[in-house]
Amino acid sequence: MDKQVCSLIKYIEDLDGKADDKAKLSKLVQNEFALTKDRSVFYNDIFAIRFNSSKSTSFQTQSFRFQIFKNMMICHLSFV
Image (cartoon, rainbow, N blue to C red; front, side, top):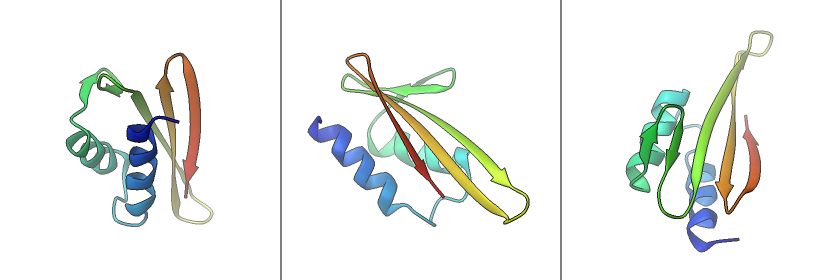
């Protein structure tokens, strides 16, 4: 996996609990990796990422799902 994609995943893992909504999380990632936003996708020359979220009403938890696109490969990550 590309070094910058690994850095992205590590950065998101380190933000666990610090970014409690999709807008805040996407802004932090956008600033950290100098990403351009086009509709719901953020990208640079190395990768593109799309953020999704859902809130479980039964547990009051927010989960985030990420799709990282690189060379036509998609990596799905989920964090709660």
